[in-house]
Amino acid sequence: MKIDKSLLSGSTSLLVLSLLKSGDKYGYEMITLLEAVSNEVFQMKEGTLYPILHNLEKKGYVKAYNQQTDKGRSRRYYHLTDKGAAQLIEEKSQWEVFSGAVNTVLHCGGLA
Amino acid sequence: MNVHYATNIRLRAWIHVALRPIRFPLTRRTLRREFSDHFEDCRDAMLDRGLSERDADEKALESLGNASQTAKLLRLVYRPRIYAVRAAIILLVLLLRLPWPTHITQQMYGRVYEYDGTVTEIRFAVKGWKLDYLVRDDKLKLEVIWDESVDQEALFPQPLLTPHEVLGYGTPGLYWDLNLGYWNMGFGEWVPSPDLFEKSYLFLRGNLDLSYDCQSCMITCGYGDCRWYILAADSPYADEAQLRSLFLQPLKSDQKYVEYWRTPWDER
Image (cartoon, rainbow over all chains, first blue to last red):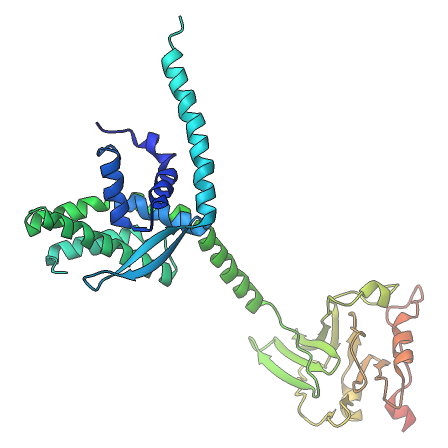
């Protein structure tokens, strides 16, 4: 099922931060993991991911570093900082309130 | 990476469009490398899945997304810094365009600028003073430049002289070369020769900055048959207190200029 992009746009940083919670990752890894975990509902493009990552890095929520791969290539990994972890908790709680409210309205919308 | 030439061109074009709003070489380099690495990762994954090279290239290119959209997102991320740098550049340019203080430490100097034959500008600076000479309509005029750090009102409770008016020197057709020997560099005094003084006239309408150490500075001025002098603290003709009182004395109602009649020639 294709998801309206506007639904995703508000929660992309939350998704990226939560992906990094389980460990440092590079861009492509994050996209594939997101796709796999969400049963291919979230198919984030590269052009969307990197601006988000750079924005998070600018805010100090993630930290980037380079690491050599087995093939000898250097990859840019992203690491969730303490500030980022705190932000993740904050955004997650906001999301829970928000999604709970949306669900409530959806289920009780037809009160009459 | 063994990418087909056409794919490489398309990748470069995509990166070029996406990075358009980024002006910082380091950021551009980082992002370019990230996009390229991502493309490569994606391509390798497709090849591992058994796709042909051509299809893998195509899929990897697709995974990049919309370049213009990426550019918009990147602009949002880096916009504040772009504006900050632009503002810094504009500020720097403005600062470079500002007239810098022209006063110098030990020497007087002068320069003549020819504009169109009728307008000549001479600028010179004396220790402790910042002065501009301007010649307009065949008359040499001197404009005194204020140092804004000086409390002008405290210095001149009653404005004797109109700010940014001119202190002029010259007779029509006579252009000053300040290096003609009218300087006494050793004491920093400027004493025009009597001949030249007789031929020419000098008038002062402008504010002078007395905040500087004017120990080695003397400027001789006159207007028509009226002459007046600004004398240095260590000159034999006046001390600093005199110099200041000269400027601080109130003007009479019909008086246009402060006049100081004692001349070096009188004393000689």
